[in-house]
Length: 434
Ligand code: NAD
Image (tube, rainbow, N blue to C red; front, side):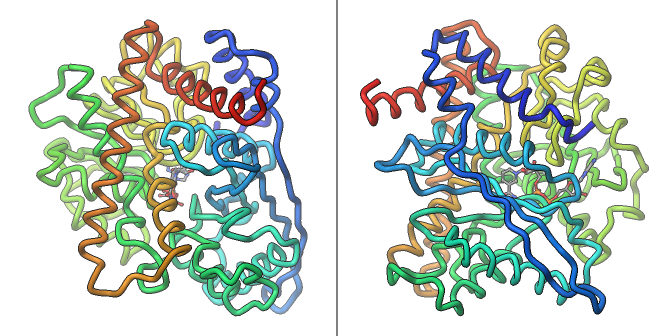
């Protein structure tokens, strides 16, 4: 159960339910249900000696936060499960993230239904180049209009390829800006910002620590953690969670091929290096193999689902034994699981709050690219600054979520959505005097 055909419909039902909870006017619900622009682009790229057809989408939801309707920001997903309804749902969630983090960016999401792992690197690069050319021809990419970052199936290398294509293109650069500002999540040596690579995971951990302190939920002295997904988000949560500033014990991790478990704790530094060199978790010494379903049902303090949508649903929610579910991914908990988790006193922090660190640091990267290039000697200082900004914003978000939840006697999930919708409401009202 990942990307159901109803995934957008379910998001709209959530908007309507939250709207009713806060007596939101119907115009606000309509604003959130509709999209500013949606693009479907076709292109061809050579694969295995033949020209293959590809279709890619870019969804721009709404930007109530800056004057005018732009710019938009959001990740690019390359995964066989990509559909337009999925990207629309994720674009709405990006608007909610901007609302919670106070960023002047509208929510966007883009993607393509391909499995990048089946292509040789040079073939994938050609596909990315052809796709970028198409975005340029359609005049979609522009730091003041739409600038993408990474998501599932894309990474710093993909972002660099895009940046490079934009930079060498004379279709672009109408404003005389640094072309690097068209794409975030780039490698540091190519206009990226220190900390972006691990920002989603690090931000999650900073916020989780604060949440534990604020909520007073009783956990083991060294809280245990299970993580589903071992990509940019899950792999970096695993890497940093045991560090002294966080002090969690990671006992289980998984990827699409299954998981590993060791109740005494995993050496996640070694595991990450193993995964990077072997491209699999399998065979890591001193561990027991488990399935993804078994991982979700482990008796741990904290469960971090950091893979795809709808992993926890009505048929497995009753098996979740964690006290806290902290969503590293987006919509990893299906709406029909919430009543079950609530009745079992499992606290859930939704992705719009928990994984917003990525877009926060993408925003900092965009700002720096628009203004200036930093000198190499500045990197250490810049990383400290990035992490400080990240910490401030991640903490602020969770403080507000916990306070709103106490004030309104609503779940943390509802509290996060109410706060996001309130911010959108306020900004649209100011803009359009509704
Ligand atoms: P990624 O492509 O780097 O990694 C995805 C991981 O999930 C891989 O380890 C893959 O094997 C695993 N996976 C896929 N299907 C699975 C399944 N059915 N069961 C278990 N594991 C499975 O992607 P990512 O960037 O880490 O993104 C993960 C989630 O976090 C997504 O929901 C994404 O939208 C969200 N997110 C990512 C960022 C970012 O900065 N990359 C920011 C915010 C939110």
